Length: 53
Image (cartoon, rainbow, N blue to C red; front, top):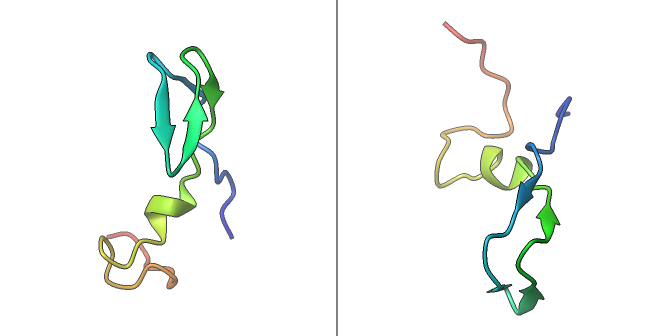
């Protein structure tokens, strides 16, 4: 499991539509790191703990 699955808060600098949802300029968002850390297109075995070198 992830100890901290959220990145630091970010604020949108302009109005944006993301996957059909409208997000107003100035909205604080908390990006989920799991959307990147478990991406099989980026990592060979994203669900397996690999000890760092």
